[in-house]
Image 1 (cartoon, rainbow, N blue to C red):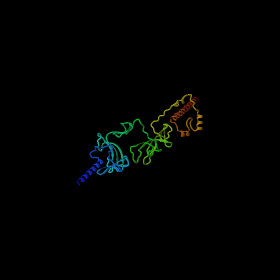
Image 2: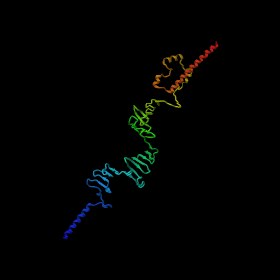
Image 3: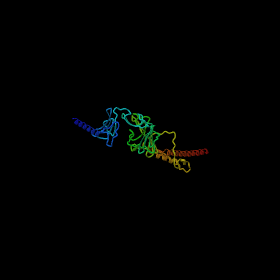
Image 4: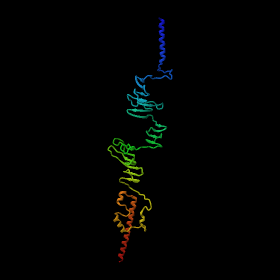
Length: 342
């Protein structure tokens, strides 16, 4: 009987020893017998879960490589979810020994309520680079492109800023405008002034300085228009000269430079000048309804007048009139002398 009992105990101990050797549990104080085949996880179609206080904290599904933190239903490679929502907690944070590791330290990717942001919490530049080039946001909030020391809110070095035209008209600014204003609110949704490029037959071809439309739909185009031809228009998108004004001009002084020779009609007083006879002048006016060399009213209505040429022409007519007056005065003087001689 004793021999049988001894054999049974020996058999139980042998089976327990074999079973324990096959299980090989991980130790909480470290494992010195880990091999390349060692792992923590599951070998069946069941997710891997890490819990604290019996609450799931980390979740890896069994059918993909997604990792969920705070969620048992991750929908991306890394999915962070804050079920309770605590400001500045639902984020990815990077710190080091220089930055410190408190809530006000480091670099974070933050989702605060529904607003996502990238923040550099230290007093240091935030740089975004691609192949060595990119942008920097300095501690003053200045943004620099291709420079680490921006001097204005936006500072671009050795590059251009391009705004493309995508629509035909200014309202809504979908055509890509630079907008300016002291305030932008519901009454002035686009500021006070804008600059845009026009490129169609209806709106013209050039740079349009426009008064933005407010909530009452009050505004206007072509406060100033720089056309592709190099002409400048005020109140018009089709300037026909270096400066075309659709409206009045008020100035303290206007100077007109004339070129060519002769540029001024002093030649009228030369003895060889062919002054038209008064009877011929009278006949010309009766026939044509205007002075010789002066444009007719229909021509002015169609083409306008050149101020420089017109002033020169008016002076010419005044000088011709002066010659007529002097000639008449001479005739009157001679008649008076003849009368006295009698």
